[in-house]
Length: 422
Ligand code: SAJ
Image 1 (spheres, helix red, strand yellow):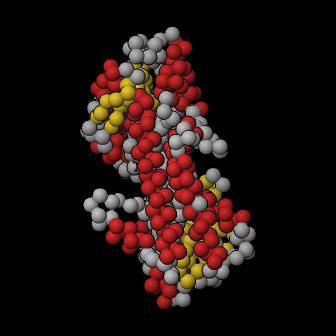
Image 2 (cartoon, helix red, strand yellow; image 1 turned 180 degrees about the vertical axis):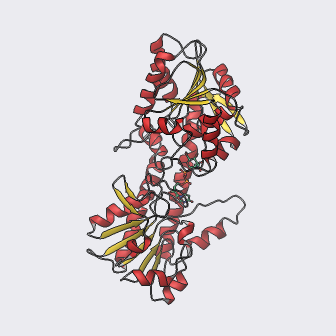
Image 3 (cartoon, protein in one colour; image 1 turned 45 degrees about the horizontal axis):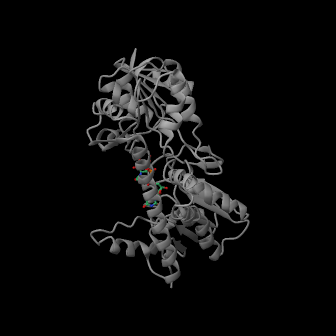
């Protein structure tokens, strides 16, 4: 019988299952995607995370990690499934509910069930706990129930799972203590115990804090464009204050967390969260503003716009919720032809966005180019390279990433987000 059953083998579940297996637990990894399950049986994964392939291979080869498409009786269960928002920005908990229902038939007295997925406050007890009560077992009495959010920076997941501090929220104090005994087998960070709802709120606060602060940087950038100063310098200078840490402006906020998590609070507590809603609006309209900068410099309907960067942030291959999608949609609505390049995102269509890995082809015949992601691969792009492929001489830089002086010497007009020309 498995000691731990991890339900959901994605960016968080698979590293977690592998770390537990390599810490000596016998782990059953469960995923509804049969392809993922089959691939893992041979110790392989498509996920690109530092150290993950080695970890998975060791876990599978040791025999401590086996995979299936449904849970089986285990001592502990960890739910790591996606919790996106619906088109109307409500929480979509379908995956949490189906994962919990899959555990229901194999739940036994004395088990520990942990929800890791970022969720609205109250989900652990009102969704997971409610469903599991259908077994006739009572959380906190017959089995332990916890909420334990992850804090991983995509691209550094394994290292952060092992070394970041963790908050464990127990439905009961003994539930939290039960979970601590498992996590401390692979987590070397400080483990803090609280109740389930405080832990759920803690996770939402962490990412909402980031979204609001990115929006603040974007508002400062908008003012700088009007005033005619360089916001990138101004932020560096302001951050010399020992207690100021202003983040960086950009074309918007992507990923499956930062642009999503604040909505859980906005939808549940609209009377308190106008600030959060406004921050979401600022971040989600940055891409449109960038297009306005280009239009003001002559980009017009029928022209080709080359967009550099499809990933939601630098040097990763994940395009989920990327601002590039917002910009491409707005550009097409203005009658522009759009070509999107990314050096790391797999070529093909991602949520309606056609991505190419051929930069020359993407730039060919473009009247304008817009850099949206500060990938290392774009750092050294020369004015000559742009000039060879583009027909126009207009470039927008949303990350202050390119060599503007060199581009201007080569006859390019360069619009930099957050840099006014007054
Ligand atoms: N961004 C800016 N300006 C900045 C920082 C980020 O425009 O100064 C943009 C990025 O380009 C990106 C988006 O915001 O499009 C999100 O970037 P991110 O690095 O903040 O987000 P994630 O999703 O990769 O990681 C965040 C982290 N949360 C915090 O830093 C509070 C990570 O610790 C979380 O574990 C992760 O979300 C998550 O999974 O919740």
